[in-house]
Image (cartoon, rainbow, N blue to C red):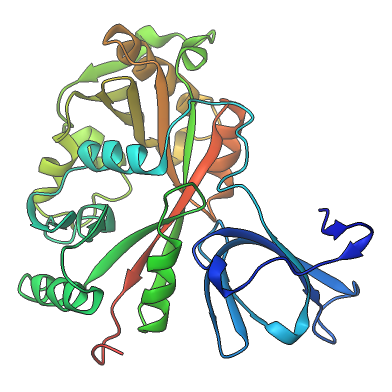
Length: 335
């Protein structure tokens, strides 16, 4: 990481650069590192009272004393992509929302309030794509009231780590005491290579709705409300995959096809059938159907700490595009 100008370290950022992506070097805090300096890259979300706040790609907020700065500069809004379909965080966010639709929605300016009886945070969180049309505090009051009326905790989903994502909103929610939960990575890849395997996809049954066997393997089915099936079957063109086994389904998966995009979810194997390549088999079968319907690009969402799933999708050619997490309102009221 190069900070020098004419051989000198230089702090070439100011409070006027709030909202831009920056790279900074600071003195390491005593006892925290064997290195003299620490580098941080992210969006500069505030610079007040001698303290900088930088939100990293993962959504983590880093606070830095101005007095500890050694160097800093503005850097491009997003790193160059090495491979994978070209897209924006906004496009993927909107596609993913259509592919996992809530049962009930209401508009708040350009935000969308979404509910589905608590089945998954994705379908039960405010989606802030654009301007809420009112000051932020008023918007958050509306979010809290809307979810309280439905007996649900108030969540706002926040994207980070790509051009046009929501680092500034994440910082504002952090300042108001909205806590971060469930960090997730959105991954993308070319679709055609997923079908280029030796897998015997003829073993896989495809259907438009999940049956009882499919739901018995799905890890979110326990105590799922009736709205769960409405969410699962919602979307432009949805297919469910089942690999039959002797004692019930051995593996399952879901794909939703929306124009050029195929979104994968719920790719799971029953405990007795894991590590047999069935996840790859399911992906291949669903990919074949998506290709038949004209899709060319793939996306999926995986929890950041799910090392096994990330390794699987690494092997299938997926790369990280951006991150998102949820912000939950403080239980003692606005702050």
